[in-house]
Image (cartoon, rainbow over all chains, first blue to last red; front, top):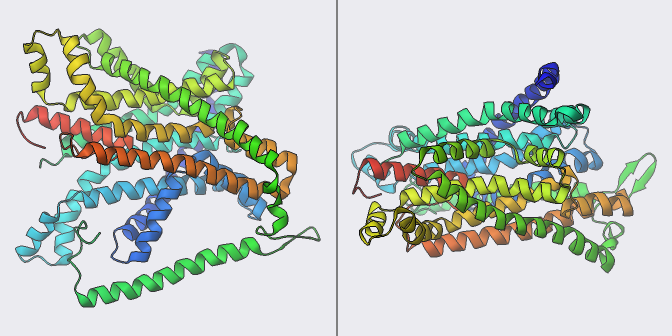
Amino acid sequence: MDAVIENLPTYWRGFSMTLLLLGVSGISALVLGTIIASMRISPVASLRGFATVYTELVRNTPLTLVLFFTAIILPYLGSRLDYVTAAMIGLSVYTSPFVAEALRSGINGVPVGQAEAARSVGLGFGQTVGLIVMPQAFRMTIPPLINVFIALTKNTSVAGGFFVFELFAATRELANANGDAVIAILLGAATLYLVITVPLGIFAGQLERKWVVQR
Amino acid sequence: MSGSSVLFDVPGPKARRLSLISSIVAGVLILVGLGWIAMTLAAPRESGGITLPGYFDGSRWNILADPEVWSFIFFQGVLGTLRAALLASVFAIVLGIIFSLLRSSEIAWIRIPTAVVLEFLRGMPVLLMMLFILLVLSTGAFWAVVAALSLYNGALIGEALRAGLAALPRGQREAGLSLGMRPLQSKMLVEFPQAFRQMLPIIVAQLVVLLKDTSLGYIVGYTELLRVTMNNLASFYGNRYLFTFFVITLVLYLIMNLSLSWFARWLSKRTASKSSGIRLDPDDPNQAVLLAEANAAARQSHPGGGI
C-alpha cells in the first residue's frame, strides 16, 4: 500500500495521459465515425462502398498493428509526428468504425413504418428526421456508443507499448522499480482503470434498460 | 439498401440520376486519393544524400521469393498466434459456461461475488491483466497471454450466456420443473443448450476479438505473428524490408480475422431464422449482450409480451 501512496505522482502522470488519449481520440473517433456512418447510409453507391470496405478492414486489424503503423512505420515513411499524436491518430482510426456501426445500427433500427407514418400525416423530410427518426435513433445509439468509449479506455493501454507514458506504461515502470510490492502497484492501476470503465458500464446498462423501445 | 434506410424515399428517376452522377464523382475522388497515396509510396526518396528505391520497387519485395522467410512466418508467427488463440478460446468458453452458471445461481453469496469478479475482469485492460499474470505468477509470456485472454473473454462469454439464459421464455424452465427435474437439472438439460445455441454467433464474434488481441503478446514479449515479422525478420533483414513485412503481417491478420468474422455472420444468419427473434448484432458482441439483457428485462416486466 505504501508503494502506491509514494508513487501517486507517477500514477497521476500516467492517468492524466490516459484521460487525454481518451478525450482526444474519443472526440476525433466520434467525428470520423459520424462521417463514415453518413457515407454508409447515403444514397451514393461509391461512398457506401468505400465506407463498407473501410469499416471491414479497420475493424479486423488488431489495434497493436494499427499503433505499430502510426508509431513506427509512419516515421519510417517520413512523418514527423511525436508518439502521443501518433497514438491518438491510431486510436481514433481504430475506434471510428465501431462508432460508425453504433450510429448506423441506431438509425437503421428505426422501423421504416415510423418514417412512412410521419410522411402520411404530412411531415416534411426535415420534420420526419428531426422529430420522428432521430429521437428514436438517439435512444438506441447512446448505450452502444458508451460501450465503444469503455473499449477505447481499455485500448489506450496499448499505446503504453509504443512509447507513450500513460497508465499502463507507468504501471510497468512502477512494478519494475518496486519488486516487493508488485501486486499493490498492479491493483492500484487496475482501480484507476475501473474508476473510468465501471461507472460508464453501469450507466450504459441502465440507459439500455430504460430506453429499450418496446415493439 | 434503399429499402432498409428510413431516411430516404424510394428514389424516382431524377433522384436516381443525381445519385448516379454523385456516385461517379465521389468514386473518382476516392480513386484519386488512393492513387496519390500509391504514387507517394512508389516515388524514390532521398535520405542523407542517398536515393532509396520506392516502396513498390522490386528490391523491396524480393525477400518474398525466399521460402525460408515464409516458413519462418508460418511456423513461428502464424502458428504462434493460432496456438495462443485456440488454447485461449477453449479455456474462455469453458470459463464462460462456469461464470454464467455461477452468475445466474439462486444463492446470493455465489451470485454476488461472481458479479463483482466479472465486473472487475470486464473493466480492466487485457494488457494490464497480461502484465499482472506475467509479474505475479511469473508464468512466461505464452501462459500470460493465454490466461489473460481466457479470463477476459471468458467473462464476456459468461455475460453473453447469462443474457441468453435470461432471454429464454419462462415456460422452458417451468416445463423442466413440471417434469420433476431439479432446478439445476432443468438449467443444464433444458435451458443451457438453448441459450448456448442462441448465443453461438456472439461467442464466435467474441473469438474474433480474442484472435485480434493475441497481438498484444507483442508488447509482453510473446513470439506471435507481429513479433516474428516486425521484430525478428525486420531486424534480421534490415530496414529496407520493414514496410514489406508490415504489409505481409497486415494481410495475414486480415485473412485470419475476416474468415472468422464471416463465419460468425454466416452462423448468425443460419441460426436467426430458428431463434426466438432477438435481433443480435454479431459484429459487436458487447452490444449484442446489452441488447439481449435489455430484451430479457423487458420480457420480465411484461410477461407474455412479444419482442
